[in-house]
Length: 347
Length: 268
Image 1 (cartoon, rainbow over the protein chains, first blue to last red):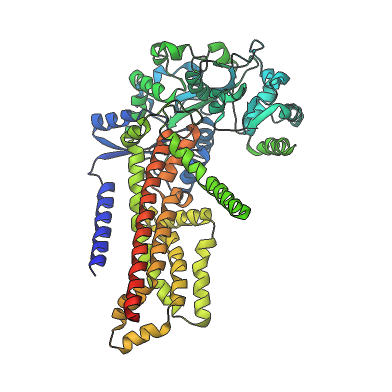
Image 2: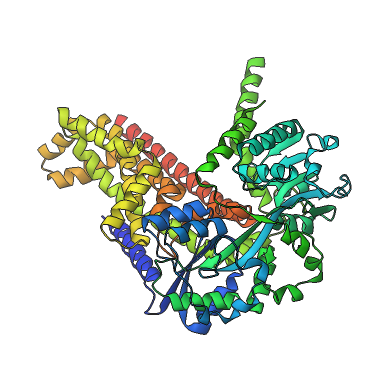
């Protein structure tokens, strides 16, 4: 009997603690959804204190995951940070609110390169947050990067020392660019050529992976890897022999942006938080945490020398001009998937 | 002689296979560098960071509280249901057993999405309670399944004898049935607890703003590479579970010994 009493008491206490944990006093709340490790978390508590509000901050891993819950109506976020292709899709489906830019004066500091992009051509829905690109992370001591070309990844001298991405759009992107085509091509002939090229490369490839390439490069177990710029920045800070190149044929650009989904109950507060994240101070602190390239025109002038000299962080303007954004290929994605499967199945 | 060595080597290989990943994970939680492949020196900084990380702390709190509450409630529901199912006969019993199997064999993703749609259609706000309810839902069948075999072993005459000697049905349940099926209940509880801590998919679809559990937090780190703080957290949880296991083992050993002693006394 005594044991049961203890049990009952334990349940009671837990429910009590749990419910008080959820129901905070009548403060305004802001529900924020972001990728993990994508903000300096102290900024959140500072904003909470300064404005006497509560921020419920959640993280997610893939845009598709976020989309499923939002589409079903099972999420009530006021502010989401996500990738441009998913924002484009959600705008097309009417799931994004237009922003009131009078509430976001700091929008003026966002670089012009990142405005008027195809996902939001009239700058009505989203505020860019960070951006990055695709390139080659290589070991300076073993690789000659003077060619500055995607052809580096096809160099037979580095057989079994090359890492490619297990991602059809990215790997095809490199091959298509080398052939001089668009990364968004829906021309079957061009795709077939790219497929042949990737098949030719396959015997040279050590592994196709999406996560963990930087670790392998840091340990110098491979000579070259196709990686995102942010991964390259952190790898280069761990091993001095590593460097990053964006081939002259051009590359991809992606932008992660902040937007207010139509489920919001407090748009003005969401806009205030966006504005806060666009201040120079907040941006600088986020750069320290995130290490992706910044869209902020003032903050870039004040980052550490070391980061400024990092070719994967401070990407030259002429490279940016040659970059292309991935567009949603809609039903044509099948053309990519079937060919990618063929490449992966080849012995 | 050779045979003996062979069997020992075989055992060793199996144990290495089972435990090597856990040992590597624990060792790297003390690594100074962020890298998962390079040992650069001993440090406790990931443990310090772990205790300072508000997100992980709150996720840990929700994970444990949901696991505990849902396991307790599922155990109570499951015990009652199992006793009920056990006393049924014929068709009804097999129907009930199959109804109970259904959620077990149903893929998690289906359970998760259907629960999400259910909550949406009843206009329930997503949060702690939806996640808790969902965990109770998927935990209960496992508890029932782990108790039923114990009930089958139970001699029907025991309860009847107890009642014959003047016990009320409730008293017989408390003093005869429950103690006899206790190992099943404990297993059911532990299973429910671990399943709840483990669950990702169902939690993902039924969570609300500000309420996340550890599996969701760890999974969302995958995009940028798992931080060594997670190694530290896993190591702590592992130690905790290990201690719990040792404790339970010791206790059940004690009980066995006491039973033996009692039997010896009877013999005399």
